[in-house]
Image (cartoon, rainbow, N blue to C red; front, side, top):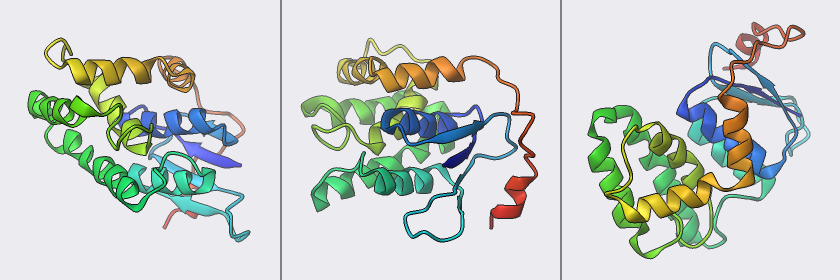
Length: 182
């Protein structure tokens, strides 16, 4: 079981999309003070494993679920590159047109950011494009990609869950988070 300490941010949406896509069992703890994940059933059978940082969590979950990373070394490297690239949206939020242009060029001859397979790179970038507030009419490749991902059942579930305001689970003491994170 995963405890997913959810915050209503693009980073939180990335993880919610991944969890919905894979069906990994999780308990969503809304209105958390920080985005985090605690795996109570880590593959190594050890103590619960706490994680922070959305990119690290996505990579961990991809390995755990065996989903979201291309099979070959080049594909995995490209997926990781785009996963880390999406951090630019945080740092350069006012340069949305430039970032969208980069995505447009990347998607010109491929279905997804890391090739023909949906990956963590797509899940990482999608919420930022969604939150960008820009029209996609000037970016036909990006618009095609965005539409394809928006039609995925897991994306619809993730955004259907997020767009409502949920209260914290009264059985969960959020102060637990501080006890398990490094």
